[in-house]
Length: 323
Image (cartoon, rainbow, N blue to C red):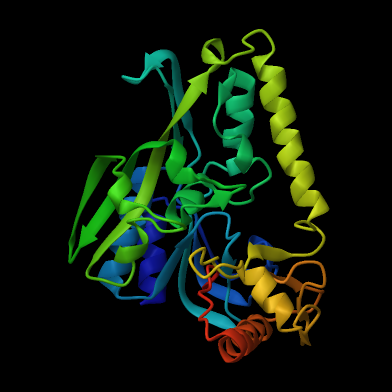
């Protein structure tokens, strides 16, 4: 079926490679190879690729920048779909929402860094906390990424997604509904293992134009300074010292202590299994010291969960995704 799918992709002129190494395609820098690695260049190609894969009944996984993903060791006998080729940004300066906010639409493969940089250059405020966040807009929306006490859903205006059910598909645009979103939760997460599956195509964000800020003349400079501040904080916290996926576990604010502190209180900072390590500088980071495997990372995740459960009776919930 893999060969048949490859031939379908070739006829449809959808870019793909075979037996593609995966390690360099994620921020964790781990993983074996994928039988097929598919790179659609627009929403139409994405829909066609998913349809073809679903009809062939081959397992598959869709990702953007793979900044929250652990690719498997060995061979992934299926298809990895990368959305990184779907990366247009749409913006009309004279198009404002009812509350006079600027609307910026990003396709799913737009890097978050590109989105933040675009907003900075246009003098649009609201996305500064996401400066330095790796990955794509699609991944950030899917995870409802949260940085410095701000969630992607805080600036979300609407989403457009492909919805597949059995052999049918349709494109759906939805205005933002706060009841469907929560801390690191999005409505897209609930549909990945059901008969009805949703895949984000693009998201529209609501931002404050420069003329509405208190310091209109220096708005762009102020936005740029804010972005640099948040990037510096990431650097100081060690986000970029080693390959990683950032925070491994979600925080449960009702429990009263962040996951990193619980792990630290269990004395697990620096714990090493194979080439993976719970970062000595941050209890909620697992880093690749050079030779980590997916199995090493999974073992550390389980070790942290077991220790925290035993000491505090609390179940750590991973936010990283094992393919």
